[in-house]
Length: 138
Image (tube, rainbow, N blue to C red; front, side):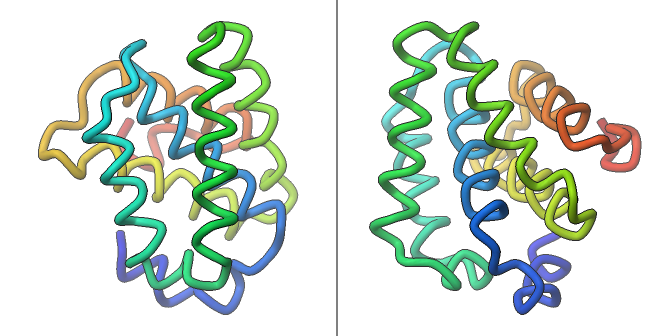
């Protein structure tokens, strides 16, 4: 999946993709209702090491990720609605929409276990983006 993202690096430069990908990362990190510092570290590593996300300033991505986490921590259900709206910004461009889901799957599986709560929020993000979760094995 990482190789697929890297091959589309030049297509993934829009603000909508940036916002949607950081919203997706926050959704997955908070999917089980607990914002685990280890998950925050994994996202920080993704931000600094992912070839596609290097199209954007790392500090800006980190701020956007943390803003979304704050929304989810304050009130998960209400925050999830707002964060899914951010994810939906990538809906108009299928390449970006698919890349956002791929980033969510990468984050979800980074610890070796893509748990049900993470899969559920990625499926919800698929719906927000007009994508079929089955296309991603969800």
